[in-house]
Image (cartoon, rainbow, N blue to C red; front, side, top):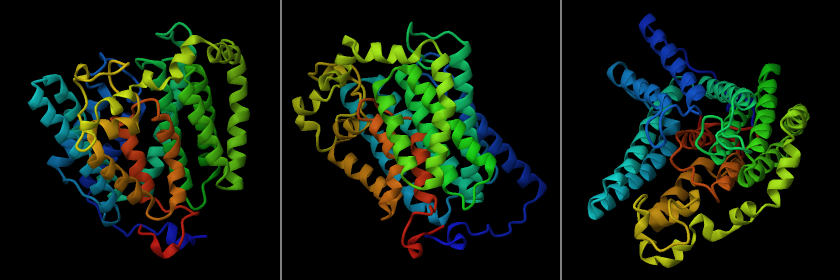
Length: 391
């Protein structure tokens, strides 16, 4: 067990001018607002949303005032993530120029945006990592609860599955898994969480169960189950929190449009059977086009490939392998290796999102990279040995 002095060292006193203190409050407020608005898709799919403009504006404010900063303990994980994202951006750019497909530049722009988001996050964490982690957990929990209200009181775009403001149910399911993981990491990184922080995790678990059940997404349901198993297996106290979260979610599930019977009906449908087929996800193009397995084929321009599925490869890990090749795969593995830092139990925090990514691509979501960043920079009670932790 890691001692509290090692896990949560006090932040050295930093004397800020009133202007600097105000700037930090504004930036943190914008980050909280980003987390709350990120699930709201007000503009057409593929276009920047309001939350993206908020994050870009935050980056601009930092750039023209105090600049960007990465704490020494976060240099390794931030650098590895930026290296992978930079390589992905380069591959998409090269293929866009080679094929004359300007639409592929959109993917390069998305990865540039992710690098920018990562630098903003690293800067806020450099001010006070624990404070940033707590703020992220609060924002993620509030965002989950907001989506519960949206699903309960607003009509869905799909006749029988919840979508909230997302384009499809699977996006909502991924959001629920990802944001609950952010809350989990934020709470686990504290030495002695207070009662309201445990309550925050309980509410996040309940919201996650409700949202994933409402989506009827097989991947989201399986990933949420994995998330609960991993949570409950870490510590007795977390196990009790999981039980409380499940019990709190039960009345929601029972009262919400016969959700249990809907899950049973969906599980036996032909749509579910098609959802299970490997070729439906586009994995077959990996075997059909092995020439791309070294450097990658890039994202976009999918009519270049022979496949049973037209469109993007519905897999995070599959997209890394096919779109960015062995080089991109090794770079991503280096990101994961750096994040866990030899304490492989840290991988538990990422497994639910990665499991969901077996059938859906979540690689371009900024919060996915934020989650990896937090896992790579947080000292947990189950890490060992204590001397290997750099905080």
